[in-house]
Amino acid sequence: MNNNIKIMFVLPIFGISILASNSVEQPVSIPNVAGHLTTTKHPSTKPVENKNTHMHASKFTKEWINPKIKLSPPPPLMGKQMGHINTIGIPSLGYTMDGNVKVFHLIAQPVEKQMTDGAATPSWQHLISKKNLEGFKMHHHNVKKNIKGWGYNGSIPGPTIECTEGDRIRIVVKNELPEPTSVHWHGILLPNDQDGAAPITQKPIFPGETFTYEFTLYQSGTYMYHPGFNIMKQDQMGLAGMLVIHPKVPERHIDRDYAIMLQSFAMPAGNDYINIATMDFNRFTFNGHTAPLIPHMFAKQGERVRIRLANMSMDSHPIHIHGFVWQEVGTEGGPIPLSARRKGATINVPPGTTRDVEFIAWNPGLWRFHCHKIHHVVNAHVDVPMGLMAHGGMFTMFYVEPKDPKAPWQPPTPEES
Image (cartoon, rainbow, N blue to C red; front, side, top):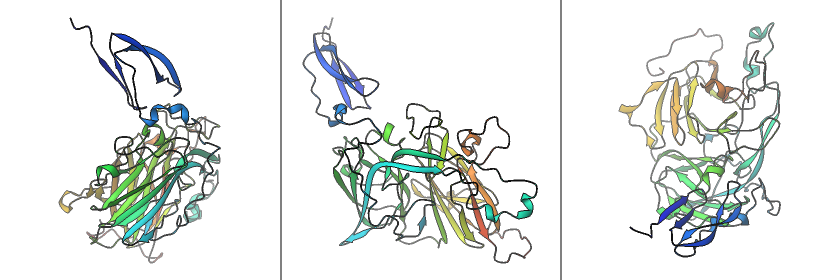
């Protein structure tokens, strides 16, 4: 009978491997459910040594913010539009050039953001015909809601990084979080040491440290960036953004190019902090906002529109548009070949994926755009008992300005449909 049976226990969240046998007992520190280090005993052939930096979790505060770390203002080029993507409600991010390298700056930091302002009038309400409101008052959520999460450059989600196929890019990441982090480039083909899967491919970026990623883009399409360290917590705290790579030779001209990050949060009533220990999500966002604060999208009649959707939540989201049939043209794997493209008015966006749709804005008017899971278009069911439910969650509008407001309605041409 073998008296030296060994069993390997792996605690993936903390990156600790504990080797056990039935020979000699040695004390070892392991994290309890609260993340603190406690001392216990287990059988072992020798003392366990683990030099992974995140084993020493007690070195880092478990609060939302470390008051000892001074938060930086957004980088100077935050809000500088140097491309043409409109990430509705989120500032764009510009870059500088170092020779032939585009240089972007990201700061991972605690962010307090207004999720919805309790405003009675959304950006699109003035576009509704007054006759439709006779004897009826539009009902919107009037409860202000802030979120205390983590983001990039003072924003949840972070800004969209916009590049072109063939670009060499450098992203300088500074960590002002109360714990280590890293950045994973979701869907991007790059060298292993640039993948951001700490500590597998790199040392984690400790609080106060800066790490530089640099790689060449060999793809085109819609991708994401998010933490590659302690992702179970950090993704859910709001750390995410989109990375759009335009093709060297575009298939066609796009007049309006929109980007929307889908996220969900669990937030107790009367509390601005995120509960990451539950799957009962109650706040569903487009670019970090819930209706009625989500800005509406706009196009002129006849323009070609692309909408890029990225899902960094735990739910799938069937996103639906009124008034149009679109074509699915891309995923996180890149552009879809012409022969494989599908038409529809609803597209499901599973977790960890992106979906690009295109259509011609032939149909004038104000059209709804929303998730079709009913609980995803309300804000935590704050109107109880439920009467006339207010629009909330993943809900906004797409407005098509008519060429001639007096022209009679016409069905779409074959190209438009």
